[in-house]
Length: 545
Image (cartoon, rainbow, N blue to C red; front, side, top):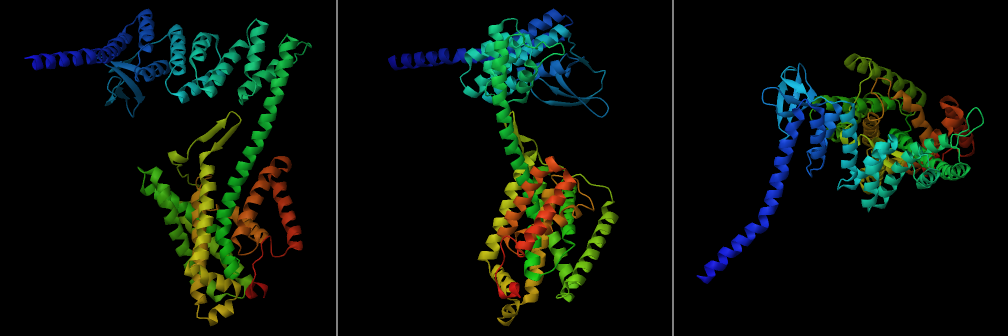
């Protein structure tokens, strides 16, 4: 009996401990459902009380409801007054149940009614949304909320900002919150508050705060200053000088990044040309069209995979390599093999092939440019701070170009095909006498170079529109990279591509796009006069001969 008694007692204790948790969860769920139902009332005063009560709940559904209500996308069904999110449909509205998140399909516009708001209620919603975000458990949400308040300062957020500052533990978020408070206090009548606000902005990399400080120290037409206090102006000038120095440094870093991304594109476009030109001595004017074919392959793959855009780019890379590579082998076997030793005729023949391929693409896809969709994982940018933003598509292209380069180097250094290719490059006659099928090596080499050009087209499709003349924009730059770096040398191609990419980025803002191209071309001509074989010249009897 005693054992049964103690067993019953333990069960009762467990129930007593768990019951408050059940009750709390049930109360919050029930509270949200009942409060959300009060939004259908026509009284704005009752709606305001309901919004205030909803904002006090710890429920993940609170923020989407308040944001939808502020945006005018919160509705309710007339039949049962069920609260729903609204989105535009083909002939009506697409609605989603607020409580369960269930998609309810498309309904007629007269079957639902908008939850109306007025100016006072919208002001309350903005404050409640800001406060809800600023007191979120996730630091990234709090930081994003602080950044939003810096862009749109308003005195109504001052109290909730102070509450958030008092509770904040993360240093980066705390700094952003103080700056958000500072941009509001810049309009204060108290000189001490304005001075402290300027000090809080010190070292915070943000273009908006720089603009505010610049405006603060500006002189009016009548000789007076926007900021009447000399002490505040002196502090503002000191902080502004520090921010301008930071902005200059990060602008330099951003220019280097864009220069490297341009260099990566040139590397992908030129590395295949470096191989074919180095091994075969062929001036391939159709190399740009191999790039174009790779870009159009990406476009076709996306047409075939409309519901898998994120994965389509991964499929397009090998597909573009195969398409452009096979076209390169066909060109080499049918035309170029008969013209070895006649560089002028090879140049004219490949130029004619480039025109044929351009017209073929125009006939199949029309002369209009085609847009390739950028996958979600390549969209957007990496926000380092307010002064520096790195776009994901260019970041991925830099990494991709390096992967292609090192993969190609491994192929040439570690594979039997690479050994044969290097043998033909250094001494074609000796390689042939040793049993190497130089004709087969030429065909595979031309196919490899063309395939890599196709991969370059995949990368370019993420930066620009795809059109019949896409390759013509990069063929001259590709030859410049190959000649500058050293014919057939991959390291030379890499250094040359990155150097020309950086030079273009830094010279263009000063001299303009056309003059920058001319200056770089003149520099390469003068450089070749001193070093005819480029930065890194290949060694071998075939090369020397």
